Amino acid sequence: MIYQLPDGFTTRSATPDDAGSVAALWNARSEAFRGEQPSTSERVLKIWDHPKFDLATDSRLVFAPHDVLIGYAHRRVAEVRRLLGIPDTVHPMAVVAAGSPVDRPEPADRYDPAKAK
Image 1: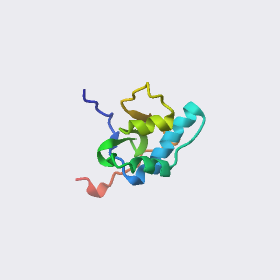
Image 2 (image 1 turned 180 degrees about the vertical axis):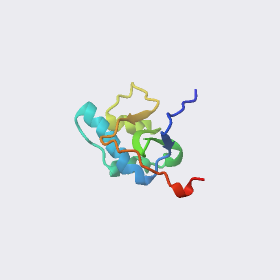
Image 3 (image 1 turned 135 degrees about the vertical axis):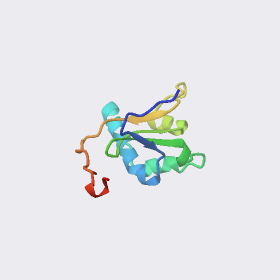
Image 4 (image 1 turned 135 degrees about the horizontal axis):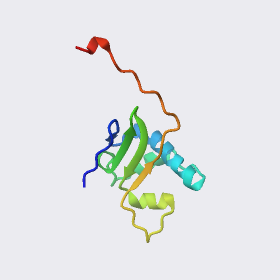
């Protein structure tokens, strides 16, 4: 099955520069569900540094319009199971952290009359 993102939404692989944003997204989810914020960018980078984890192929970020990170998924299930306290009897297929931004910026006015022809 192929899913299509709504207009204005984008997806890409994560880069090390995204670690802080991913940690903030994980913390927003953890705060909502467990009342704690355990993630840091260092912790995210440690997960991503595993020798069997390829950031380019094993991670996906989802952005709402205005480049607001709203989702993250990766395929290191064992590490996620340990971090989230998921028992061995549960076999997650993927982890997706999703949320809504605290701030909703006004759309940027990118119209440049000089480029219109």
